[in-house]
Picture 1: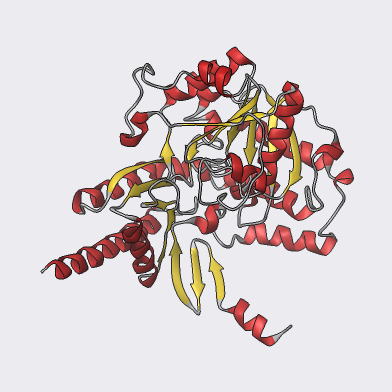
Picture 2: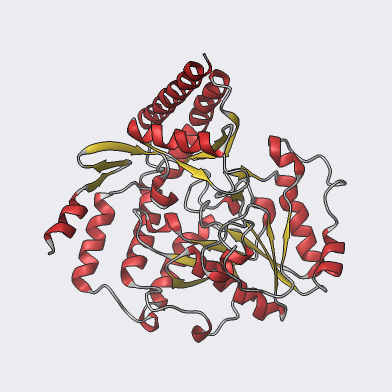
Length: 411
């Protein structure tokens, strides 16, 4: 191996929720790119992957369909009752979302996609265009005819529940006059992850379900970030966001356990409309991804990962609320499970938080969506209270340093 390349690789080593950089430990409160529910390493999963590498790392999807069906059986207890089909031909959330769009377009014979402001559905040309942002697409253009982006309910800003929707836009008028009724699907993240961990009020889920039913629009739950235990249930669609009753669920990220790329689509039987050649990829359904997915499900069950998140969710929330009481620079703490966020005064302040936290051995991530001032706290799901204490203490130190700097600059 190239010695320089090997030296660069050797700079980094993972151990559960910790990333060591040049032997300096960093506790990762971002779960990598939100794709490490089991941390950087998990011996049981690693051993399974090593065994598979010795057998083979690639198989054509022609040989892996039966394996996919076995995985569906393991997922079935965690799915809405009518979700009973699986499509495993992707290694990314972007690809899986595009698969869901293809299903909806073929099923309905329409083209348009409705998404929410500040939503994130991927970074391919098509999924970036339908996402509710601007900075990712200013230099690129792919048009899905008659697609629309709709605002969040105004009450989301302070996380209060919706008592009525009288002041919300009339979606029936919007699709009639804004899209010529040419809408195939509505895609929603149960929690808007890249938007800053924005929790959608449950009544809005019901409103969208009823709207989709009236117009025969396919409702897609993008659970790339919320799936595999992140919100305390296996999928948010069978927990907090149960009122969505989606026709399709998209998953990726956490499905690989320790960062193994895997993406897939779960759907109601009526949505199982694609021919094999209509959506596929070279590495889709590769044996390493399937092994990682299968073993991740087993580990979540055997090690009671969901119970761990449920047990410690309030502990994490209360810790963040205490910091909010202590520091004026922390506002609007919100989230579910191990998926929390809060706002800071400005994008510059948020960037300084990330830099200062890193110097203290804490990895956190921000959000460029919206006003770009949000910070996200999403530790690996294996984290116990001692890990959460470490994260909260380092956040406390971070804000103590920054507020002291601000005070000294003011005087």
